[in-house]
Image (cartoon, rainbow over all chains, first blue to last red; front, side, top):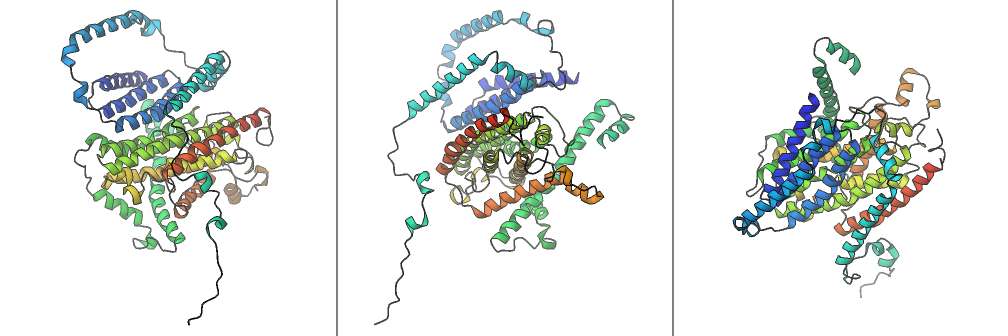
Length: 200
Length: 358
C-alpha cells in the first residue's frame, strides 16, 4: 500500500516531467524537467531494489551529463519564434507520422508485455545481498568483452571529439603553470650590495 | 535507546506512525546540532582568521562575541528578499533550497558510531557521490535565474570547476572502495580498525590529500572560490540574493564543509575509531571511555578538517581559472589513476598490515 503510493508518485512525476520536457518553451526549463524525469526514474529503479543502477543514474546523468547540458543550453541564444515557424503547415503530415510511430511502438512493446502477470515484482532479496557486487561480477565475467568494447568505443569518441576541436600547439603567450611552479627566488631576485653614497 | 522508545511507543500508536516518527526524531537529532555547528562555524571562521591576521574578530555581541551568529541570523531573517526584474521567479527561489538540501541529505548515511547512523544502506558511498554531485545545481540555477551577468559568470565557473574536481574525487573514493571492499560507510570504518597507522590515510595517502583538496574545490571555498570571486565578479552566483535566500546559500556552504570534513574522516581517518590500539586503552571508567572508540573522536576529526578549511582561507591566494583546470585534470586525475592500480595490487597481494588476509 505504502509502496504503491510511492510508485505512483514517482511514475506520475516521471510522466509529467517527460511531457514538460517536450512542451515547455524555455530550453533551460526543459533541461531541468529532464533532470526531474531522471530523478523519478531513479526512484522507480530504487523500488525494484536496483539501488546501484538508480544511484548510478543520478550520479552519471543528473550529476555530470545534465550539468554539462545545462552549461551549453544556458549559453545558447535560442530563438523560439524561428524554431516554431511552419508549425501549422507541417502539423497534418507530422500528426500522421507521429500516429504511425506510436502505433508501431504500441505493436512492438504493447500492453501484453506489461502488467503484474507478464512482469511480476521481483522477489525481495536477502538483506546481505549486494546489488553492486552482483552487477560487478556479471559485468567482469560473462559480459567482459562487450563491456570492454563499449569502453573502447567511448575512447574513440573522445579522441574524435578532441581531434575535431584541436587547433595545434598553443602559440599564445599565456603563462605556463608547469614552468611557473619551478621558478626559484634566485631566478627573479638579484640582491646587490652597495656602499652608501656620500653627499658631495 | 531508540529501540526502547520504539517498543514503548508501539503500545500506544500503530506501527507505521511509530516508524515515521522515530525516523523524523533521528533526523532532528542529527540536523539540530549540525545547524548549531554551522552557525558557530561562521563565528569560528571570523575569529580564527582574525587571530591569524592579528585582529580580534567579532567581540561585541554577547560575551566574547558568542552572540554574533544569532545576531547575523536575525538580521538576515528580517531583510527583504529582492527578486530582480526579469528573473525566473520560481527557479530563483528554488535555487537556495537545492543548494542546501543535498548537504543535509548526505548525513543520512554517515556513521557516527558502530551502530549509530540514520540509514545503514549498502550503497552508502555511491549515495554520497550522487548527492555531492547535486549541490552544483543550486549554484547553476541561481546564476541563471538571477538574470545577471556576474551571477551567470559565477555559475559557469562553478559548474566547470565542480564537474572537473568531481572526477578526481570519485576516483579517490574508488580507491577507498577497493581498499575496504564495501560501499557501506560503516563497513569502511570497520575495515580501518586497529590504530592510527591502520587507517586508510597511510596506504591511500595521495588519494587522501586529493580527496580533501577536491572537497575544498567542491564547496567553492578559498583558494578555489572563483565562483564567488568578490574582486572580479562581485559575489558570483549569489550576487542578487538577499535576506533568507542568501542565508540559505551561506548555510549550504558551511553544511557542505562539515560534510566534506566528516566524509574525509570516515573514509581516511577511521571515523569514530580511536587512534590508540585497543590493548593500550586502560579499563578506567572515564579515561577508558575517552580514549576508546566513540563519537567524540569523530567530532574531533571533523573539527580538525574544519580548521584546515579556515586555515586555507587565511593562507592561500585565489587560484586563477586556468590553474584550477590544470590542477584538476593534469595533476589530480593522473595521480589518482596510478594510485588506483597500486591500491588494487596491494589488496590483491594482501599487503600487511592494512590488507592482510582476515
